[in-house]
Image 1 (cartoon, rainbow, N blue to C red):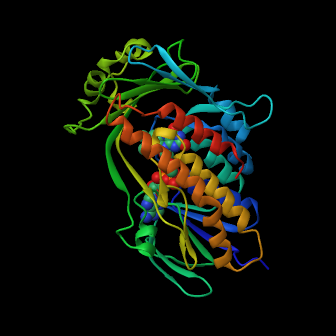
Image 2 (cartoon, rainbow, N blue to C red):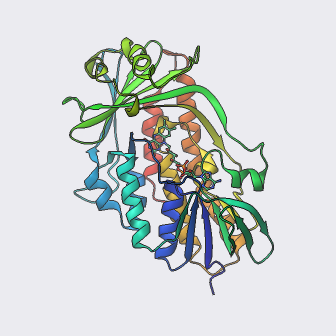
Image 3 (tube, helix red, strand yellow):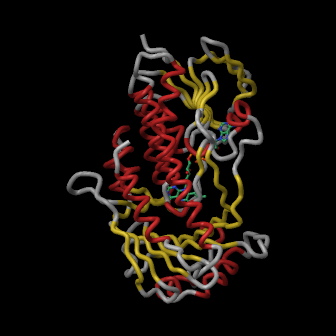
Length: 375
Ligand SMILES: Cc1cc2nc3c(=O)[nH]c(=O)nc-3n(C[C@H](O)[C@H](O)[C@H](O)COP(=O)(O)OP(=O)(O)OC[C@H]3O[C@@H](n4cnc5c(N)ncnc54)[C@H](O)[C@@H]3O)c2cc1C
């Protein structure tokens, strides 16, 4: 008999939704509690790398995700004026007809993952979280904020970078560290010349464009925070346009289109990697809750999806829970560490533009080659 038949997943982000779908498809009863009262995601784009697409295949959403995204096969590095200085060819990891990578709107990806949850009949409670969690050798008893109580063979903390499950089992000190950068992103019409992700290295900051459809792309700017000027919604478009004034090429052309505060997101960035093991007894962490890279490799969501798929695969086995969870961290740790370290290295280099010996393009190429190895 399998040791895990009933699973609670705390957090309905990319990690939690993927894990619940994969578990229910494997015949393991998984349910989600999501703190937010509605499914709320930024109306901004995201890159889904080949390794992530490959992992999404396991829950049957690959074709839907590819069809809804903008396919591309390389990342182009440019100088501040938009002249090409280097290219990373992304490895093809899927069969003929599939792209190396896509850009997609987060709400579109969210809709596809929600459809997959529904198709797998995953029970979801929105606006609910845990109040207490007490475990013994045979299971975990959870009290919820909606007044109910449940008993589970395993609890999965998929509650993101500020994970309360992590605080509960590893203590409040095991948290992320802010890196001194923040990332601006704004949706704009796609410039015809932008057919793949591109990065522009400027005198103060890095910027770039990422297509998400034939019509739209997002511009990003990684700001190494000097003043850390406070941002109000009303000021955000002007502030972002000012920061982008250094840049030429496609960014200069698209800059004036940044006018709508509702289509801008700005977030400080943090980094974290918890040492293994990633569980205590019958509570385990996945996704940003346990390893949160800065966004430079565009692979955080990818690592979250892969965690979910690997965990669901292991939980099909008949072995003691402790062994399965030990094996989970063994299979995942080095791969996630590689992404966290590569991303953080580039993030640190970006704080000193023009730094001698800095090779962000080389790091990106090597990180993508490492992720090409199957999970
Ligand atoms: C600026 C930026 C750009 C990025 N770009 C990319 C990219 O292009 N490609 C890529 O692969 N990755 C990217 N990432 C990383 C990616 O967004 C994350 O790695 C990914 O969202 C992690 O998914 P997750 O499900 O682990 O966590 P989250 O997405 O944070 O989801 C956690 C969920 O748990 C819920 N929750 C929190 N606390 C509780 C609680 N106590 N109880 C119940 N529910 C709770 C939250 O409401 C949320 O829904 C980027 C990150 C940033 C900051």
